[in-house]
Amino acid sequence: QVQLVESGGGLVQPGGSLRLSCAASGSFVRSNAMGWYRQAPGKQRELVARTISGGRTNYADSVKGRFTISRDNAKNTVYLQMTSLKPEDTAVYYCNLYIYSSDVSYWGQGTQVTVSS
Image (cartoon, rainbow, N blue to C red; front, side):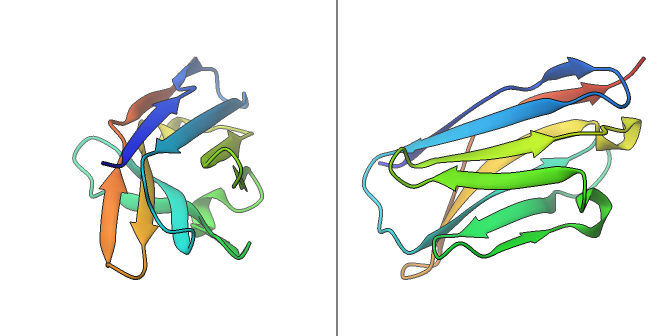
């Protein structure tokens, strides 16, 4: 049973920073992708950033240059460093683990990020 536990959300003023963490536990193969998605009220869930086990990363255009994703394979943990936050970054952020060999996705419970003055 794979579990993803997120932490680090909260309320921050525009221009501020937050760091999200997601720890994966359970049994899963090393060839995978871990990433962050977000869903704002009334909108579809969208990819924010993703890192593949080989080290490649990709970002949504809206966060390039402001957000940085990283992972610690020894800890099965992925991080999202968010800087220069904007009100439009307000959303519930979900951690995702995708297993290529089985085409299975696992999701965290979500953590709220609110950017407001």
